[in-house]
Length: 102
Image 1 (tube, rainbow, N blue to C red):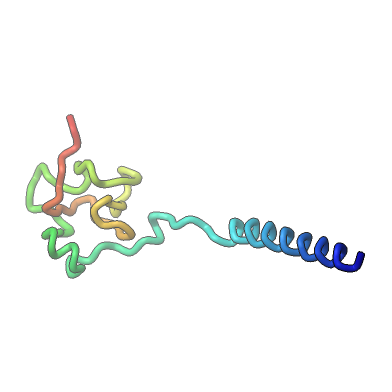
Image 2: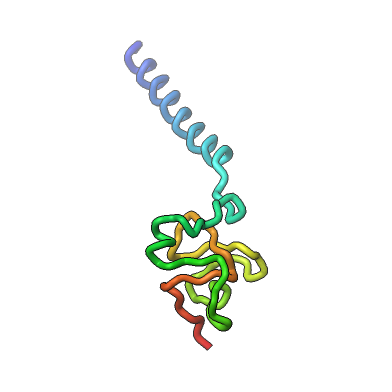
């Protein structure tokens, strides 16, 4: 009989611990916000490879009208699918530029 109660107690504590850790992690870990991301530097290796600049020299081609940019259109710095984990300047440009469909 002692073995059964020990097993039950073990199972209860294990399940309780797993539930506690799962719920606790959800409360402690917050999803990353775009404002938390660093700005892409023109010195970044990937930025250099794609000729990224913070200010486009083309009057009609910039990150704000590229189909790869994400986030709030009114923000100066926004996430881009090409540079994950970094924000690009809306006035910027890179060689991966793809115009938004009209």
